[in-house]
Length: 315
Image (cartoon, rainbow, N blue to C red; front, side, top):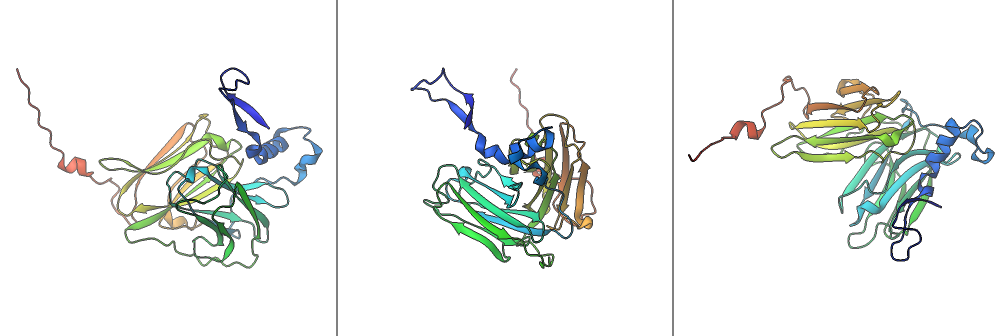
């Protein structure tokens, strides 16, 4: 089933119409209908629908690691509660852009819960070809934990794995595996009922600004979901964080937090930025990727130190 997006004429054999894939948004549609409808269909089972919440201190960190192939734009994935099919976390097709790169995401799930990890490839050949990829879902905040799910290669269009979150997991405040000169930044965003309106980015500020990560509006689909993402930055460099809402009404009831030097979202000593959802059209934050930095003034950029201008005029 599809909804017409655009086309030339109607049923023209030389100009096929373009349709949206409604099934891709089925979980979001179900949650939204249950939330706003006064008489939703009984087969939706709306009494069992749950909305993902902010991770509690007893929740269990689960890390999704994906080694991408030469066609990263085709890959998407989601984690669903098995009983209700509620989408707890997802990354849409088109998010990953760098061929052969590795993605690492951490989400927080309830102990003892039964879940389904679903990975999809828009072209239908999985993580195959030229530079084959793989994936795994592990316990903890790093890629080195106990493996709950794994796979890779040509899995076709889609593959699903069921897994249970243990009830006896002890988080030992694992340290991220980083190289010398790098420092982790963990971004936490509590979304509202219109998650598709929100996007964010991080840039490194220099003579030529460098995009570190960009999540455009339209990627997040699940109302009320919590985004927890860790990126690695260069130490002692200046960075710019921007979060925005395309509707201009902010993240109603939401919040935004940045933790520098840790993946522990409960370590308030590493909190460098916090805002409620009242960001309206957007909010910015500029910061130095360094711990225990006494100076609050941003450093001079190389262009400010070495730039010399010479003006000559012919009369």
